Length: 331
Image 1 (cartoon, one colour):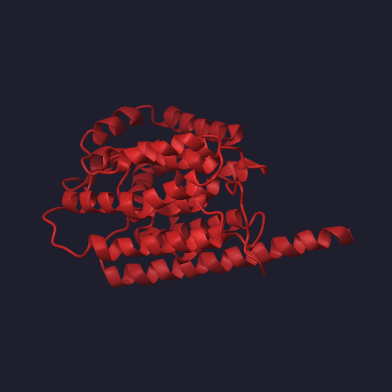
Image 2 (tube, rainbow, N blue to C red; image 1 turned 180 degrees about the horizontal axis):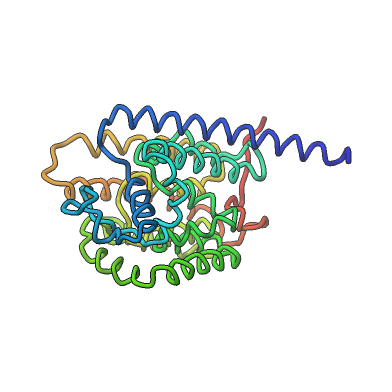
């Protein structure tokens, strides 16, 4: 029993750190939301949709600029996201936002400390993508944590397109089965939702794959390191249409293997905000286009350089951990 004490002590430290980080980001999100007044988070759509489904109503028809549940955009999420948000429906939208951000941050820290607290990928918590993830209440922390914990595989079903990149990088049969099973349950309960969802997706104009942007085709060079999970992650994220906002860059911190790389990614992501917001733009899509352009040159291409500097060999440790080839700092 005595030999287990170091493991229990380390688990207790990880749990305490995860709880503290979770509470800190939950408090930050709530303070940020209070300053924004009535402007809703991105999570309010799945939160609202979950409550509508529980009432037997169709969120694809009722959420939107001209629907009973008013929102700037129509509901473009799969119903799996609405079902996953249902547990948060028992509290107010403001409290749901804080809880979702806090739990996601805690899960991510628990995942990244699975091997060591000296993981340079932990620099993500000081990075601009993490800040924006908390401000807008995104799924990025949950998805990134799912690369380590297969039981979170249901999250893959909530953002299935981007989840393909995560799963291709860190494949896990259990996570895939959980995502498929979760999706199957929603289809049994609401068999009509894929048709409604696909109809809404056809109205989306702001999403694009990074590889289609200026300089984006260079990212295909990551295929030269296909044996490495971080190379597959970069390649997958480059080829899948997504919103060109910095929170989508959060999983790119899984590419980091040294403190120096982490600091570089920390700096280049922080440069994005001032540059994108420095000039007048005519529309929402103009802003998205500008953000997507600079994300290629400031974020994706530096990550490509990191990947190409490594040999095309699979890491010696378990790739499902999401920390392949990790080198820690001294201390």
